[in-house]
Length: 213
Image (spheres, rainbow, N blue to C red):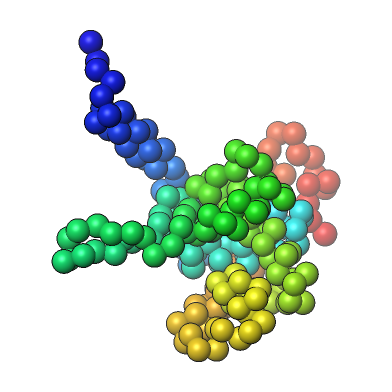
């Protein structure tokens, strides 16, 4: 008979957690093209479109944020510090999942806009979180939802840090924000050419009511 020892319990928990990661979607092969991303994962278009309709952040900005933060890896976390080169230490932050949301702000999101069951490792909740966060950023700082560079600066530094200009002393953060903006621009141009593929694709969707504009 199987003995429920502390070691066995810990082993079972590790297997369950690794199983969740194993069943998560693989990162898209071509992350430079939003059309190819959505062709691999058409449900991601639905999630991002729903978040855009709900919160106002454009699809291309949401996806550019996620590419920058996690390269579309569902369970990624910051690497642990290593002592003596091999002894695992603490992680530098509690960031996790597609949007690399940290524990405190994820808790706020779940309380205010999400649900108890929202998961950082699910694309639906990651896109909704980014939409919610950027709407809050706009209310706190006045940054337009069509300004991905400064939205990302505030996403990285927090509204307070953004208003204090903390990013000005961080060239890497400024560079990342410019990359986000450039990628969002490319994604927008690409999406204009292929978005019709992902609209009205479900049996219960009836043209023209499921089309934008």
